[in-house]
Length: 437
Figure (spheres, one colour):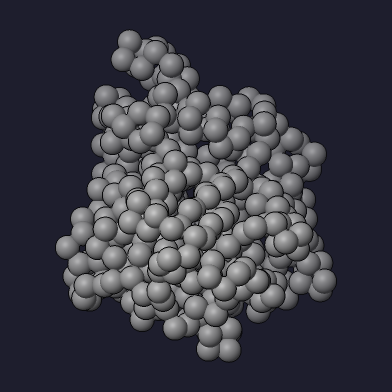
């Protein structure tokens, strides 16, 4: 596999060059005109399920001989279900890569000759490149931090622009929680019960994103972590501080075991979107879902840093979350149509607008000149990138199967089953065991 470049290169190329340079594009790989084909797209971002179906409908309107079925599943069971579908010969023609590419070589089509490849930003396809061949399309540049309701903070008299350190964020959260508890904000925000919530039930939230924060200050890239036989966790104390920050202002602050029952829907649709809470650890991918629930509330969102205390405090985590692959075992005419759809979506003038404005993505391609990002949270990600205040996604270097084990370790800590030091020991042991398997 090609060695992954520094994320800084990815970010500069994705935004600075991506919005300013490049040339117009057109779809390639043929559109299979004249053939009636059905493309089954299986992906793991349920928050874009509705807008993605709209995108698919826009393509099929131009290509009436093609039908696209979009199936979306959230989180924990995606990898298992995908492999079951592929091994069981259930129809999957485009799928989100949710695991190490080397585990999927029997099912990934070589996409090296596709027109979009030359426009992919540096570093964005390294994790899906094997022996010089490209097997996956980078869907978007994504970033996560502490997403917050700017209006609630403003009404509480908190200047969010000053919240650039762990201590400043902690102090502001304490201030806001005190105002909530005193009833000061109740008239305007009758449902507001706590500063934040933390969806510990979702394995990817603690097991990937939270754990990635201190690790991204220890490892330079996913490749470096992948090549390590042991999990260092040099900044375990900073991880403890982050967990404290993210849990002691939740409705479950007096019984953290209750966090293990909080899922994504509770946190977003039943929390942030209805202003029951003001902060969540999430990224720009939640924009389309918030917009679908309440566009006015969606437009209030901003992003605070997710701090590694004492190390890097004024940063968000940024990377390529997923790649879309074409199933090489699909029928040839379906593969032709699938490739054409991907080129149309990410490289045609109409598709680019849909990528940015309908799906809310920050493009991972250099030729999006003149297209303005409209989603508030994607704008925030771009702001941090432009300021150079980012850390990388090294979690792609976790061994297969580590996510659920790591999440269970966090959940054991929240439930009181064992101490924080025990949790760290479990994380290291699980990593080492899976590396051997």
